Amino acid sequence: MTDKRFFLTREPLSLGEIARRIGANLAPGTNEGATLDGVAPLDAAGPRDLSFLDNLKYAGAFEKTGAGACIVHPRFAERAPSGVALLLSEQPYRAYALAAQLFYPEETSGADTFGEKGIVHPSATVHPTAKIGEGVTVEPGAVIGAGAEVGRETVIGANASIAKGCTIGKNCFIGPNTTISHAHIGDRVMLHPGVRIGQDGFGFAMGLPRHEKVPQLGRVIVQDDVEIGANSTIDRGAGPDTVIGEGTKIDNLVQIGHNVEIGRHCIVVAQTGVSGSAKLGDFVVLAAQVGVTGHLTINTGAQIAARGAVVHDVPPGQQYGGVPAKPIAEWRREVVELRKLGRRKKQTGGSEE
Image (cartoon, rainbow, N blue to C red; front, side, top):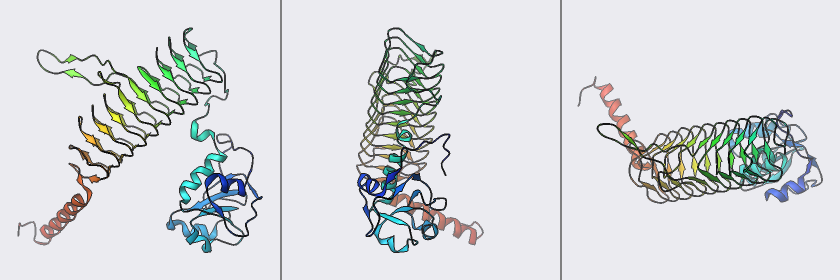
């Protein structure tokens, strides 16, 4: 069960409404007027909960579930226990995500963390020249600088810092202890706690007698519907802007260097680092702990396996992995051959024969 101190649902929803809103079909004979209160995992769901089956690993839990209704692929419908209403979908997990959004809309856009929405807290500091839209929440200790603009219904979390001149769109969530400078943020952007946007890029003219700092004169542009995980950092450009494309999702503890351009709807997973002036096309996936060398291009639809080290351009739609990263089939063959070599050496006592 979800803890109602943290997660508040909207009013109950009927099966018919849920099915229409998520693009699922009700199994024949289902009472579309029956209502549900929320969502829950298969093994914890009760008769007022909606659950789902997407991975056959959990088929046993599905066959024993006490859920009132489940989202399931049509080919698994016959495995449902008696009395469980079925919503049939070709993509159960995506359908579940849409259903959970219906019940918990604030969890997709961010909610206030202090408990007083739509007000500027007396302990916040807002410069007289800043422009604050209707319904904006500014929580305790937050600072909004001169000439900054915050769009309507946006939440500025406790102790967040919005530097002078920055703009933030509508319906955004700027998490506690976040800092934003030299940046323009689009609509419906979520920045989780501790995100750092717009600080200096790491630029130095190296050499004797000392390393000279290169002024970083660009900005960070974060387009609409971007989500950035806790304690991730995005440096501003040195001259060109650093750009995060529409719909891109960035995990926790990610470093994006100066002048990087990330396309639309990319996925960047935890502890990944993207060096300066690298370019990612649309729908690129960087798995956990990937490293990307600067000044190269990972083209549209490419995917890099976890801990891959990208040192050359990656063609569109390709899957790469390894150190240095290479086509994933080639990398896997090399891993297999190395394993075989290791076994042979073990069998021969370490000789080369």
